[in-house]
Length: 324
Image (cartoon, rainbow, N blue to C red; front, side, top):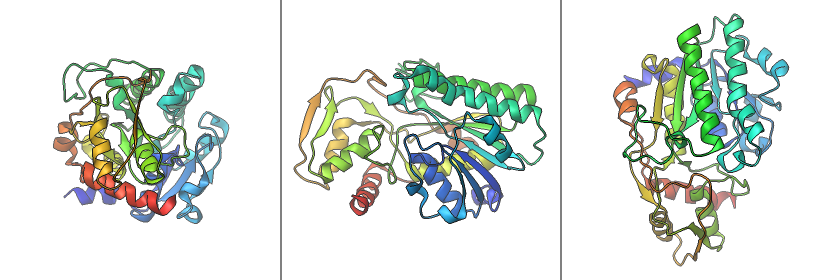
């Protein structure tokens, strides 16, 4: 039953902004390899490289432009059937340049929505905005659901939430066909350890395999809800094609709470003797616990994560071994 929804995107014309990023390039490869889509990739290569899509480079139209460059971006949207808007400033960099963070994460979203509002785009089937579960901040209720309060604790969370609001407003007021997904700590293959904004799990796996210490912030008992990359990609595509996703927001996670110390334990099963060092807690995304309620996306869209932590770490390990 769910397969017929995924089939809707087969062979369609698609634009992916931020298409060289971690989630972005995995999404691009899936759209090309699994759905035979005609994909235009938009990325300015600030923290990414064309190397990430080398497997499908000859099958996509890559445009090295800023998502803020309306003159170059908007013509690419003509006759596009699906737009996946992933371009953003990462959470670790958002505080160092808050103006740019606002422009890339929120202003670019508004500019695209305004363009879609004022120009004829009869072919457009869905505009998908990718947000983050960091918008919940430090929630007193776990697992945290889409209707729970947002408690913004960083520039990144503030601008991602603003982008969400713009997206929902343009659906309600101007009937732009949209969906929003909130990712929770995505990890897995394709996350470059050379990228300074690589997630904790990617850094841990890389450091374990190269004999470097695993740095734990604080006591390591802080938890997150880690989502494997293939699950995040599947949920993103499903949110674009499922009629029940229209005009709504969905958490993408696992509803499983995993501590940093537990991550070290799981990685040590594959690389015994890992060295651990405890360092001072960082000042971004510094919350104690996070676990995401995914009942809505399961009930409405039929989506369920397929890759658990142990399997996810194993797959991540295998990828890093081939790329280091």
